[in-house]
Amino acid sequence: MLIAMGRKPREMNPNAILTASIYTGLTALVRLARKRVDKKTCKYLESILTHWSEARAEQKRRRESVGKSRLDFTPIKNAEANLRRFFLKILWHSTRRFGNNEFKRVYSWEEGTVGPLNALLNYLGARLRDLATTRYPFPEPEKFQIRKYSDGTKATIQKKHVSKYAHDDANETHWKAGYKGNRKFPTVLLTHPTLPGLDFVDMIRAHSVELVRQCFIHNVPRSDAHRYIRLLIHRLTPFLDYVYSEGKSGRNYF
Image (cartoon, rainbow, N blue to C red; front, side, top):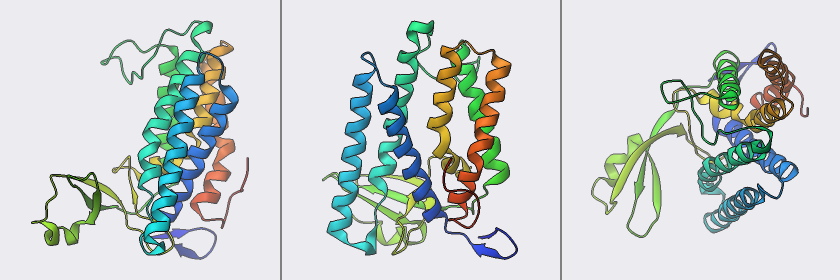
């Protein structure tokens, strides 16, 4: 995919961009969790630190064992869901003494009562989705088959090569969307296969969740909280631009 940054379009490397954004976003999440923890939420910080440490150690082990010809981002990507889940637990429990009685995500009234924290998180999610849709397009991802074997190992196979593995001893298979890696960057499988840009803008989700937490703690009116969310996203956009353009535009800090 060609992406226009300035006068001359350049070739886009989606796996490189997503590797940088996902790792940067999770690093920021860990840093924010360290700064916001208290006695009641320290157990969630410990879980975050454990998952993060194990993921990085496993990634390093795999890189050293197979070499650069088969870079592997799976340990980091697999840890992402757990890190974000425990980060939300810090949100729920650190706001309890300020009147919060919500402890799980509710995305619509069809699922249950949408309280003030979930309402702000839903508004944040909608703004991030809008940003991903309008500003950060990605090429159509390809399909990979994940084959799991009885010894616990897994293989990620491009769709065009799956027929070669039809008669091996895999006992479980499923499909994922993503971008194939190369000698410099690993294959990246997507959390949001129909909107890869959302995987990218998740880089600033933890910062935005922290803003939601502060708005709740300080009893900020909803309309003002919405304005602050939009303003934060606006101020972080140059950093997103920098990562998305691989340093060709934007700003490398915020």
